[in-house]
Length: 376
Image (tube, rainbow, N blue to C red; front, side):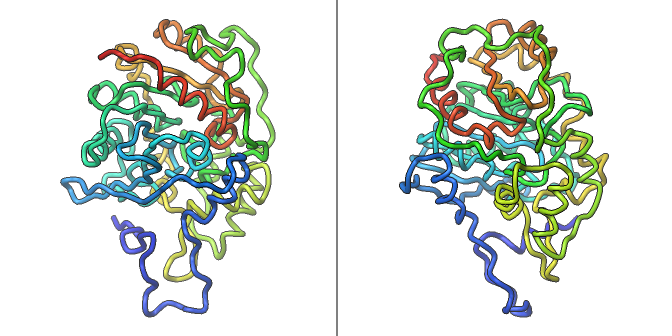
């Protein structure tokens, strides 16, 4: 199995035989000023650089390091996304942070066995944290990244001081639930809403970061799906279709037709950062899941109920952040609280990709939760 990205790393030179009349691909950080303006932090951007760790089998796991080293917070994205999904949140967070491209995503190497489940991902993340000399981290995992974080915390407790699960629990959502990341998405900002202005510097009064009480009613009525947030069934249908496109505009058109994104501008950023131009001029998604048989691609997030046991055995602080229009319903919240009564739940007004819909509020929660004492 070939990984096309192996010969098209960020910053590599164009091939001598390529059409030099084509416009250059945008720099991966070219959207940061726009992101900073959207979240209201001004023009001062934190230091950032692309880093990578080569594992024993030769596979590379790539990441973006933000701010001071060693990092204090490590961010793990959902299936079909990449490290850039966290850019707006990182800009609001303002602490040393590592955003990892999970194997088969972004700039990380594709796996020959196409196993992108939580266990294999956790092994790769552990190698990255050890390779970069990072100490215990506040692990923030969205969707598949959250399931990965559970395994990482259970098997490598020395690397995890706190665990934040973003709109995911081990029990999978149903097909008719709205969502953007568990089984793969258009792009890391495909579900981004236009309402990502800078939020207040503190979470809402109902946020239980210090109090330890849930901020959601497990017996409450489920919210209806909001426009612009496709269901898991729609996501699966999107992924089974066209794999190559003459232009990114055609990808955006198809994404809009499937209900992704609030507008064309938000989708343009997400699609640009999650696709690449092939040598033949066609465009394709960077993540491996888009190039696999649908059943294989969806296997990473299937049948993960066994992760309840390691999750409930953790002795570190655990926080579940639920998007009210995401994939975690109130029954799953109730199950989380039943199995882990000492842990917390916070609701945010967002979809499944909380890091894109509510970056400032999420950053505030990460900062506050990371200050909670953890076992020595």
